[in-house]
Length: 230
Image (cartoon, rainbow, N blue to C red; front, side):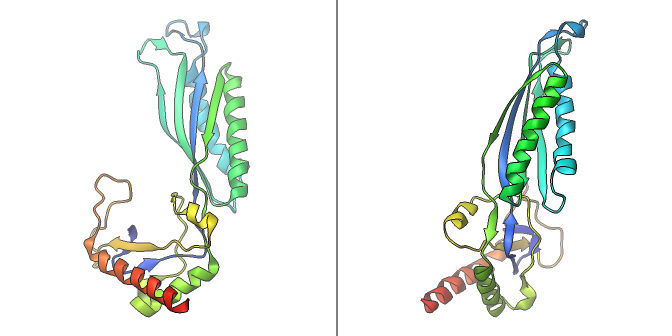
């Protein structure tokens, strides 16, 4: 279900529709010291803070501005006491892109920024970029097939054929890597315009049962039409 589309509607697009998602696992190694004597250590928190800030330049200054990319650090943990500089700081985040070329270039830029920024503060960076879902790319021919079928089944006013891309990831992309495919979205927001459904991965998300009939109709229509063509 897609919270930004009204129940009773479907949406899709040709080409990239959802991003690749890689996990960033980073440890900044410093040297612990008492907070009263910071000169006797290497503060990994200061170094890691500058790393987080510098990573924002990966997208704003090192990526092709016509190709979307998102670098987010969502976890930052270091130390257990207010008066002790810890030995390490641990950061976790994600890299998201809409092309393999941008993905490779962004990974290289992240590594360069992380390692050189940490070194500037006398710290050392251990970086792992864990490969996640690939870019989800819809086949143009199958997109046309599904859009035509959806219009026939639901009516043109209930079909969005040029849906904006999402920088979220989807493991359906693995299927599309092997065979041509088309990933489409089922609207679940209240059709009457009342306050909508919370976003995906939100604890308050509640599937709108009004969308079920539309989903069933489209799955049946696709299966039957495909069978007829074969």
